[in-house]
Amino acid sequence: MMTPEQNPFYTGSLCGQPFFCHSVEERLEMVEEFTAQQCRTALDIHGLQPAVDDAIRCRLKTLEAGND
Image 1 (cartoon, rainbow, N blue to C red):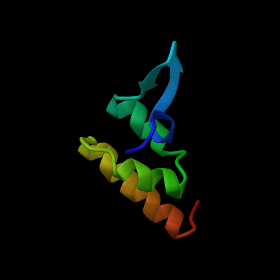
Image 2 (image 1 turned 30 degrees about the horizontal axis):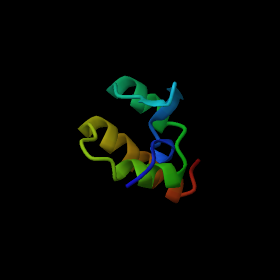
Image 3 (image 1 turned 90 degrees about the vertical axis):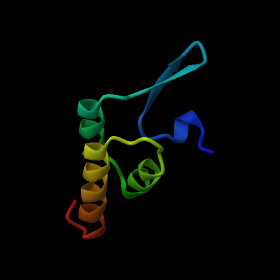
């Protein structure tokens, strides 16, 4: 099980309470800056929105092809 800080959609904490990005729009923006490792980690997150899953797979493919 990953810690909150290992989740690529982790945005910080307040008083020990972790916060995460949940909206599709915000997640899609975050994916644009993900590393290959962050993409792989994100794909393990249960309940990922289909559009976000697609964006992560596309980003990973781009990174693996060396186009970014």
